[in-house]
Length: 68
Image (cartoon, rainbow, N blue to C red; front, side):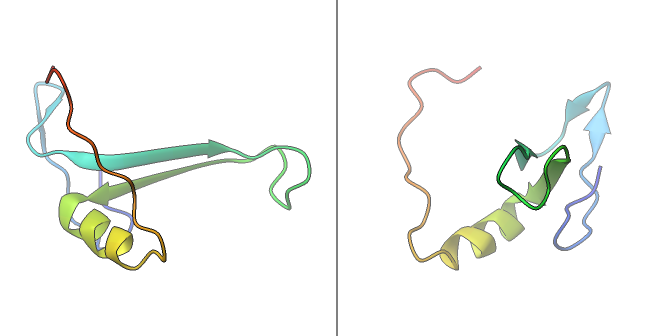
């Protein structure tokens, strides 16, 4: 698996990622130019930080109560 922005390889060991990453999936529907398409994006943590900092309203952040 690779980061869609920088191409960095996300390494897995025994099916478990050795670093965390951001995953987004969108099933496009009616009233879009992409009706019937599914888009998936993977970003490494560094690219997610760069992406988020470029948003006019960055992602809201809250603490996770329990880490799995």
